[in-house]
Image 1 (cartoon, rainbow over the protein chains, first blue to last red):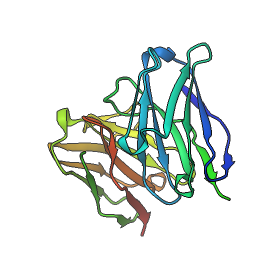
Image 2: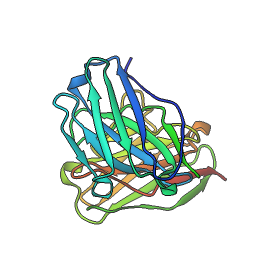
Image 3: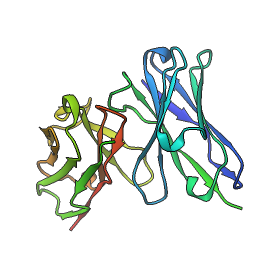
Image 4: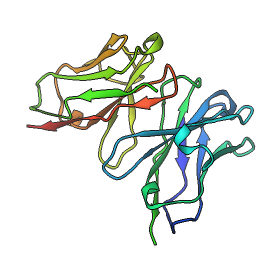
Length: 119
Length: 107
């Protein structure tokens, strides 16, 4: 079955960077896009950007341009999302989610990775 | 950027009742590219409806979606205990955006 398994929780200090991984299995990795969505505590869902694992092209939400980098490793079917210059407002659960096309619904989602930014 | 407004913020209903959730877009959503997700506490969102009215794999038929243009609805015909959760709409006709969510709680 299709599965997206994310890396474990992280605690970071303000100004640091964090890199979250999302390992895909059960399907052809390069045939689907991977989006990243975050959710601050008690808040709604916020789209961050997307990577095409086939060629590695990326599109980021304007809010995150310059601070977020998405990459992939086709040999391990894993995508990565790095956020730099962390601040307390970046404390959130970060999800990866698969989509057949760039403009498509998301199914399934990873289990989420909690990133806590605290001094 | 398309802004999605969901209403009501909270819906208090009893098991067996019908739930109607609304999602209104600030401009027309192209090709009815709208999805609904269910999220329970501590869990990732789960896709319920895509393309405004198509049920995702394994979703019970008590869930139905409708609408087009700027106005969309999610209907749960008879609420089961496991349906009490938060529901989000999402448009993907352009840069993806989510609504603020509707919480369906037990009355």
